[in-house]
Length: 210
Image (tube, rainbow, N blue to C red):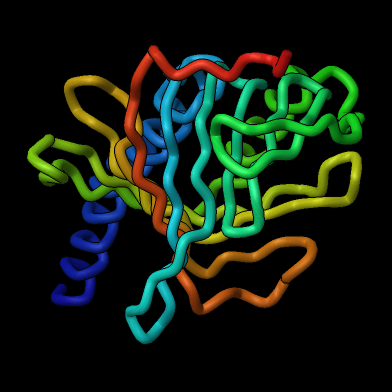
């Protein structure tokens, strides 16, 4: 009898857990489909990323201005790179001066962005939803998931274990942390963590240099 009761308890627990797991997976899925991670729904913003090493030290990695899904300026310790569709320029700061560079040759740039987002969404696994917390004075939903997308048409892929903070009121991403980072050019999981903080401002513009 005790064994039967135990089996019944396990069965009920599994039944009760299934909807919660499904709800969590569904919540994360919507981030990529018209939600906070959809590049065609996201507002203009500045994404600042640092690398946090296992010893706690941090170093700059990237500072990116986004003006829609296919206009960006990415400044790293090695310089700045402006991309507008397939066209690109190199410079020394967000304000240039800019020197025309080679085209990125990614075909239709909007389709490339959309396909990259779709591959990431399709590869999501090990979904976790932690409910609400506070981040910089704002209420945020916290999600975590693993991702290893299929290679794109150039054989490139990248992913890892993402932790994401989404503003409850504004429905937009406030922070992303990428641990166990993997990529086609570095398939061994990294011990570092990429920490990205995001500031939104519709005044951000990326204009073609004159």
